Image (tube, rainbow, N blue to C red):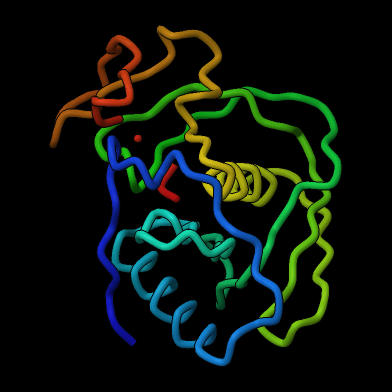
Amino acid sequence: MSLLSMRFLPDPILRRQARKIGKVPANMKKFTDDMIETMHDELGVGLAANQIGSLQKVAVIQLPDWEEAIVLINPEIVSREGEREVVEGCLSIPGYRGLVKRSVSVRARAIGLDGKVIRIKADGLLAQALEHETGHLQGSLYIDHLVTPDDLWKIPQGGEEEEVEEPGEDNGTGTES
């Protein structure tokens, strides 16, 4: 396995829509293993392919209490219930956190490495990670979902959080996925 290069805002690939994958290619296992290694190295709970410069519609997620990551090919949210406010950051927008609106629960569908359909019913952090990663694959970032423009905080190294103005696409911001 090898670490992949992260992409950071304002890299335009983060705003591009990923392309759906037809048949799962033979090299997908190595690619997703590298994504998982990169996600672990960055201390994230999720990673979408465009965050490492690929427009393949692929994401990986591993919650803190999981032993293994899940690989999601062509993931999509098929239904959402409720709304809640949560704090998020992003590996591609380091040093920032924001208060965003997310669903209480979601139902998602994807394809696994074996080519079989995966159906997921999720709430809590998994629902949040699914919305965050599928958003990446649609060219959306968590800063697009801030409750208000004032709900973004810069996190100084070794310091306390401070509120900042909403960054433009030319500025950097921060769930780690």
